[in-house]
Length: 170
Image (tube, rainbow, N blue to C red):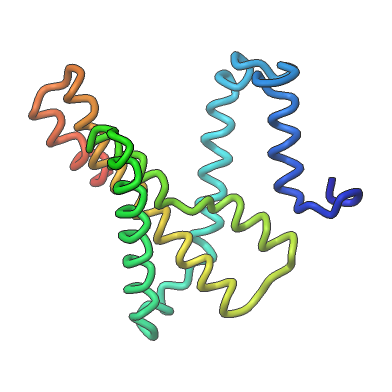
């Protein structure tokens, strides 16, 4: 697809996964995907490590507005997604969880496209910083919100309150 049509490689990866996966040809079955979960977790960890390695925290000391912009972007994205879902009559907790997921920027996609296009410089570094902050904000929001969803179904109030503290401390 990259050579023939000129699409980015990541688009080819996604389309190939859709074609070979359980939703189309089923050459990669749902069981195989479930069994590959530990490998996927390691791969995600490596991607997040690479992103963290490229993150320059000194930028935030020299340019505090970058941090303000990143947090504002995350909050505005969260608010927009929450409002849109709430408009369609989803429960506030489901809206909040979906909005938290929507805040995240895919580090894998950003790194892949950056590598493919051989981008370097201030704009790329700012993008990496924003991606790292968005992902961190999304992870924290999900860690805080997910136990409330469990509480709706069976968990105790104490475990709902202490679980996020346990996960964040870990």
